[in-house]
Structure formats: C-alpha cells, structure tokens
Image (cartoon, rainbow, N blue to C red; front, side, top):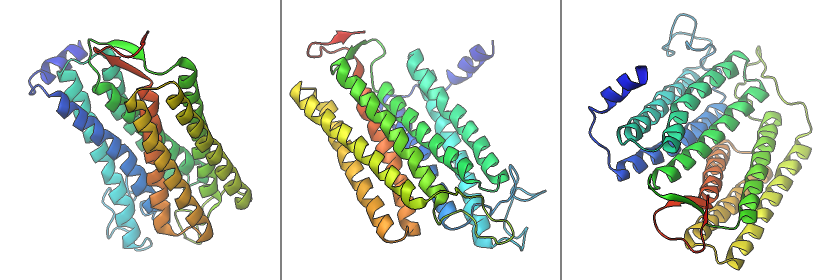
Length: 321
C-alpha cells in the first residue's frame, strides 16, 4: 500500500531519459567517494572532534561556530562542513531512486538504487559512533571501509543503469577469468583493510587534544606498511595476470579498456604511497591517497561488471545465464 502510494507520487515527475539516469548514477559515485575524501581532510586537520557529540554538534546545538571556546573555530567548521555533505550524498541517492523508479527499471537496478540512501544512512550512524567513541582507530577504519563499499555499489549501479531491461545476461569473458577478477577484488579489500590499520597506527589521529587522547592501534607501523605494500603488489600482480589472460582469449574491447584504466590507477596509487612513506605522510597526500582508493575501488567494480552484461546485441560466443 505504501509503495503504491510512493509510485503514484513518483509518476507525477517527468520521465527521465537514460542519459539522465546515468548522470545521476555517476553523481552517486562521486558523492560517495567524495565524502570519504572530505572525511580524510577532517582527520588530517585534527578536526575529528570539532563537533564532539552526535547527532548534535555540541550539547543543545546543531550549529557549531561560536558555541564552544574550547574547540578551535576551524575545527568546528571543517567537521560540521563534512557533516553537511551527508545531505548532498542523501539528495543524490534519493534522486537516483526517484529516477529509476519513475522509469520503471528492472528490479536489479531498483535494488542497487535503494542501497544508496540505505547505505548513506548507515554511514551516518557509523560516523556518529566514530565521534562518540572518541575517534577510536577501528571506528575510523570501519567508516572508511563502508565508504569504499558504497563506491563499489554505486559503480555497479552505474553499470546496470546503462544496460537494457529487456536484454539477456551474457558472460563476456570465460568463467575462470571472472573468478580471477573476483579474487583481485578480494585482495583489494585486503589492501584497504591493511591501509586503515596503517592509518590507525600513523601520525594523523584526527584530534590533537592533550586531555582526550585518541585511541590508536598499538602495532609496529613499519610492519603494517610492509603488509599493506605486499598486499598491493599481490593485487597488482593479479591484475597483470588478468590482463594477459584477457588478451589471450581476445576479450571484448570494453573489458580490456576498463582494465587498462584500473592498472594505471593502481600504479599511480602505489607511487603516492611510496612518496607518503618517504616524506613522513604529509597531510595533503593523505587526501590524495583516499581519493585514489576510491578510484581503484570504482575501477575494479567496473572491470567486474564488464565480465557479465545485459545486452540485446549478439556477443562473441556468449554464455547465456
């Protein structure tokens, strides 16, 4: 009953074109990844507790500036600004839901679309827990990993939106290579987890207040850096192997093109990490590295999505699912 009422309201909106739907899905990717970058800026500027409570900024006030003299105004503005960006993420997520619902897209597209606002609300809750836990390193890690998951889902939404609803699902690459793609994605997850551990033991805790020290990961950072780097090398090695295999089986051009982009991004991300290591992790590069993590996640999802597509056009030796 409620959903029927929702559909009757949505039907009053203009019918969105496919181009509009894809644009909104692209905006969802950018906003999901962008708020992770702004979150890293909050951390490296030590503004993580610029708003020490949640959902309010200070007890009794949602508006931060001028409320407390104990917290620097800059920290209040940076943290509160990041919180305000949540509304931009929610708005973009709601827009894509309305668009694909109005267009009466297939259930698969609708599912991915609804995951955008649902995941964003969950992220807001995780952010609140992070603040209430005093920026404990593991809460920050979960917060970032959840953002990367949302980037992955947003990329899949973008891919699915561009496919025809009346097409057939075909595998564009052999199943073993699709398995190899999944394995590379799993190793990417390991790289991301190890990266959050490096951050948890690193110099950017998110707050520098002497009377409320931020709980840190008490592990040797050198060992964590090596773990992170070795996982990245393994991830890159799998991608190189996948590239040779795709050329060996004459995979479709879109699949190979996406993998080329992914390889370039991973190499660039590795170079940023090396520079960070030898320059004592400058704040500016932390934001760049987080942005690179989002790009690598989105690109890996794009390669995964290209291995199985819905199409109305004949594909070379398709495997109907």
